Amino acid sequence: MGKYILRRLLYLIPVVFGVSVLVFTVMHLFTSDPALTILGQHATDADAAALREELGFNLPLVQQYWNFLTGMLHGNFGTSLFTHTPVFTEVMSRFPATIELALFAIIFASVVGVTLGVISAVRRNTIFDYASMTISLMGVSMPIFWLGLIMIVVFSLKLGWFPVSGRIQMGYDPAHVTGLYILDSILTGNTAAFKSAVEHIILPGTALAMYSMAIIARMTRSTMLETLGQDYIRTARAKGIEERLVIVRHALRNAMIPIVTVIGLQMGGLLGGAVLTETVFSWPGVGSYTVESILKSDYPVVQGTVMMMSIIFVLVNLGVDLIYSVLDPRIKYS
Image (tube, rainbow, N blue to C red):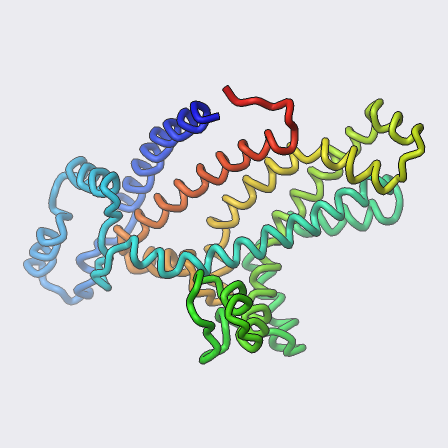
């Protein structure tokens, strides 16, 4: 197991290198001059040149990339051009908000998606199957930003059930323990903060979860249909085992490996997909911060956030692979 983990961590090196080259190239070739963005359009050429020299943007691109890469290897993802704060500090201050949103979305997507998939497989070609797959098709088809806007109009502006934006009502912030408002409010017994945090996360969390829920539901249905046709399922039923136990213990558990794979990939994708959701709902996470940085041509912030998210995505995939051995003891890592 240890050798396998070490080997997978070594695979992280070429992935990080490739992502760093791509991000650096895109940011430097296809965005506006940050010197002019900082100084304004009325800045003189001399002022702009002096600022480029101060920031190191007058160096050859290869040298700039080398400085970026070596700094990243030492844990330095750069410094924001506007706030003059280390990117790592800025990202980590917003990371709990993104993690909380992604966790809510993946839990919602997993519970609802697996439930719909199992019902569709067990009640194949019935009204339940058609309804479940219709919901899944809608989840795949609707863009996150469009769904988010519709949910705001209907549930916030028309019905007034949920807040329009933000993470929690002003003045309700719970005492900091983990940075996750819902968990912190539970740990500190702050009922008002818990209620406000849940109300604020329902709309963005549901909007973010819809696509993942649809993918998980379709994968669950497919794998369950294949599993329910296996000989050991017929044997279990022939022994008189209760149908509920046959479905949950025998069929669903053996169908979980591809489902867990999809859930793991979706969790990594949600961290990146949260960009649109956070922007629409003004959620103060890494995604909305990245969008603001792109609009301001804040190179170090964009490069740093993308690199950190890429590393997290690879580590999530590694965690999913290790869960396989728990679900199926026959799987061994050498």
